[in-house]
Amino acid sequence: MISLVLMLLMSSKVAVASSAFSARQSEIAGKLSPSAEGKLRTVAKTTPASESDAHLAIKEAFPDTELSDTDMTILTFYVMAEASSSLQGDMKSISDEIRKMSEQKKSVEKSLEGQETPTGSMSKVKAIGPNDYYRSPAALPSSAEPSQLLQRLNDLGAMSEANQSRVQSLMSQKSRYDAMLSNMIMKASTSDWTAIKDLK
Image (cartoon, rainbow, N blue to C red; front, top):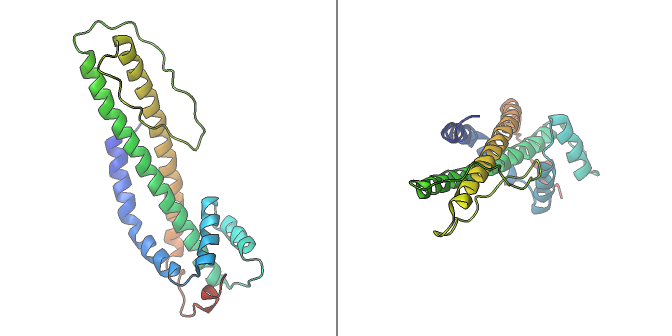
């Protein structure tokens, strides 16, 4: 399991590498009508696994529009950049929760110092869906019993580990998107934005 520090460093590097993608996405967004941009954002939320999947979804979003290869590349770039940006936001949110859990864990460990603790217990964390993540729970009251503190330590450890696995998965997914964006960025522009501007 990679450490939180390593995850944060990797996230920072990803953010820097994504600046060029964001700039190109902003350029494309400036040419789109609000309704067309809304449709593309809806496509991005489906997190298409490949360029071909994105092409199909874009054609379904604009069924009565004939798009050139260049226009399709531009729209696909927008969709992939939007999906990548969303993943980046998710990684930050989850990393923030991991940090909060780490801070609470230190506080609980400090509260347990010098106290007799019962034997270890299993985590009682409720299962969540594969695309969700755990939020750091509210701190225990100062009157919490050692057994409650120990239980919280176990729960925080289980939640943090699950969140770290989720961040790793998102990083892998984002890396695939960024690789596709790198291959498209030079082709995702045109001297004639007429078809893009006319999308509704």
